[in-house]
Amino acid sequence: MYYSIVQNSRFYVVLKDGVAEELILELPTEALADEVAFQLQMAWYDGESWGKNEVKKLDPDGYHSEISKAIKNVKNRIQREQNQYHDEMEEQCELQRKEVRRQQVLRLRNTSLFSL
Image (cartoon, rainbow, N blue to C red; front, side, top):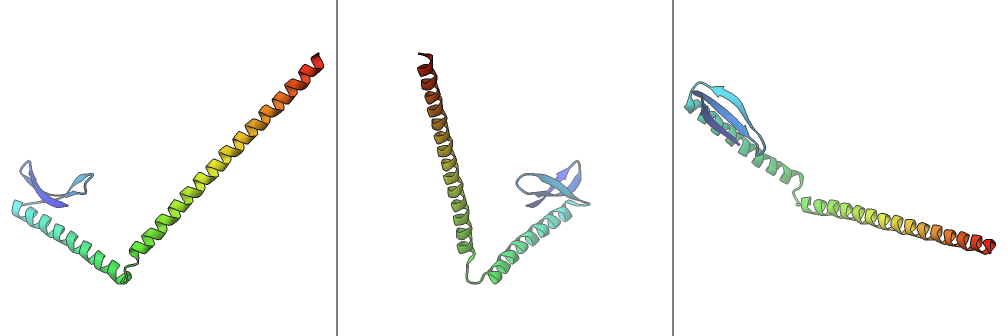
């Protein structure tokens, strides 16, 4: 967003993007600063509408939403596959722990049989 301010008897045009503010121009009169800020803002709006029209020209049948859905489905599938892989790895680790415990119990039984 463009707007004008007066600071220390100087006239500035400010650009604010929602996160930061930046003084971009210093002009000699307040009226000129107001007009420049207004024209810059109008140019911004014109650019936005031009961009929307260009997107419509590139995608006249409106496949944008279908493409977005397809991308979301791929991301969700990848997440499901990662979760499934994670679950499989946890299961394998648990099976390995159980096998190690079983081997330890067998060793303990064998050593206790020999010690008698």
